[in-house]
Image: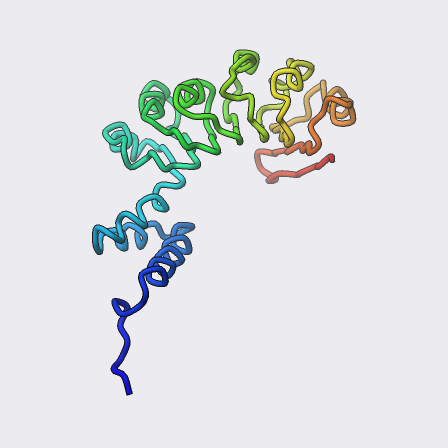
Length: 217
């Protein structure tokens, strides 16, 4: 009867599959364990590090460390900029590092400008109320964008230009904050127009009562 099998006795492909399975399971809500796993050996680090940085969230607490690093973020797929008020300039500096493989970006317009120097995200979430959406028209780097989420009032000012500038847009989500704007009927009209994306959603957010979602397809 053979002796007890250890992890080192497993075939390389099986060992890698187990490590990756554990790393991806922990990456959702236990990145500390993923980081600890990546420090066990150089080989494991090479496997796990890309998973550890698949999603990067820029906040006030980690801003300086992100600004000081570049190589670990070349495999980042999702970038969320949540640096808070008064840190826009620093956040832009952090975003200017190379993120060539981004698929999703969430942040304000200045940070998106910086990201577009390096990457072409398919999914964009705009979290500011700057009425500058038109400045994104003509950006070839956004020509492949399929998903967009932004403020309703901002979007409706330029709704007619959206389909012309972003022909690949298939999903659109509009936020309505606190109260329904006077132009709500224009939003409904757009939802049923031929130029609306196939998937169109309204997110009605209330300050105290949570949020309501209305979807139109």
